[in-house]
Image (cartoon, rainbow, N blue to C red; front, side, top):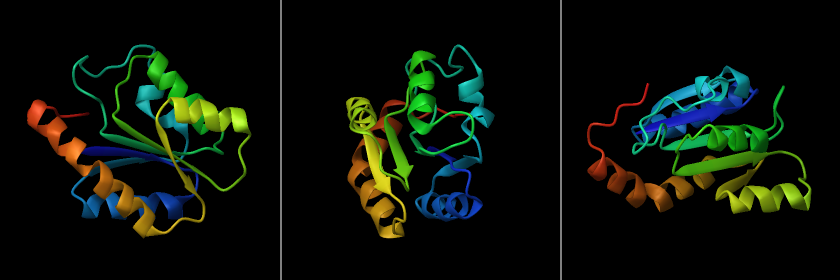
Length: 141
């Protein structure tokens, strides 16, 4: 299983990486959404039937592009990812919340507790394992 974590705060990246690694995820982190190779390509490099990462968790307030814009760009490029979460330390306008909810985004308000992330991972764990059963040879780059 693979998780991509994007946050400009190195302490948040380290905390989340630790949580995901303890759950046996391969973790890739970026300080800026534009550093993520899935963002810089116009066509998703992943195979059509296999999601790139299992989870993307991104901050909303990011340099160059916000978290919702980042998610929208990945979806427009054809990237598949079954679970996505958005973190924010600020109040978001209703239209942003509606747009994110329409995309199936899980919200985490900062500051959050490690247990909140673990609870979410426990909730989605069955779908992660069913994905592995469907695509046992899926290796993301």
